[in-house]
Length: 225
Image (cartoon, rainbow, N blue to C red):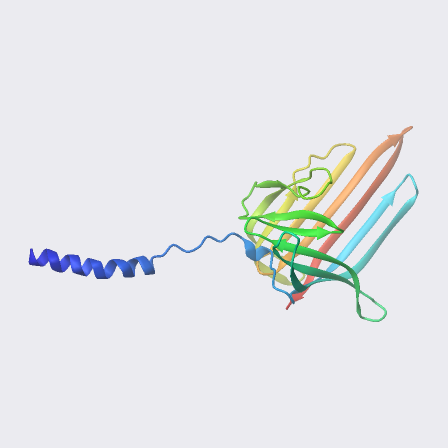
């Protein structure tokens, strides 16, 4: 009986320590793919082109773009949000000239940005391959479904290596008339590192092909805080 009492006392001392040391760690929801700390910036090279065979308007451009989280605020829904200042590099002066201001917010469940005054759900958490959502659920545009194609994979570009990235793509099924490409890659603790969004409409009028489309590619060249 004496030995049993001693054993019970020893277990009473050991179990609390075991509970503390063996505590279950919090699950990684993937929030680090969408940083919110102000002062963070990323620079990109942007290549864009447009074509309209109906109006005869075509063109292309290449420029350097910088996106910087300048300050935080509370949005209309009472959530912490951040302003995103987007600037283009003036090749003549070498100065960054303000282009526009977007804003973003991250919740436990998703990450959103207001792009050209259109709120879009960019990511949902936690990221899982095959998970899909409507990026336009918060605006009046037609539904446009996105899904995770890659999760937690390494990736490299322009001499930079990222240990963990996620890749978002559209699930839109292209056809002979309309074709859409949507790729966005995010790196953990960095944010958006690659974006490619194309949209084309091809019609045949009296046997003549008429194409209307836009092409856009944005690739990271540097980042910091």
